[in-house]
Image (cartoon, rainbow, N blue to C red; front, side, top):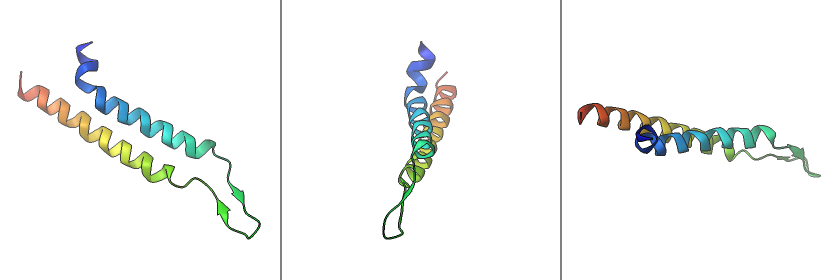
Length: 69
């Protein structure tokens, strides 16, 4: 349980990254009547943002834990 207390933020952000990527892949792109592509591209940078935040959080928590032992 201590492991989950230490890394909860990083794991949550990584899960959000995975869910954002899955939401993009599952989304059904359509072409509007005027020829524009309608697709949820906002999930791509959101997934990258959550991934970067999660990795930074996990690395910081790991290094912080090693430093304070």
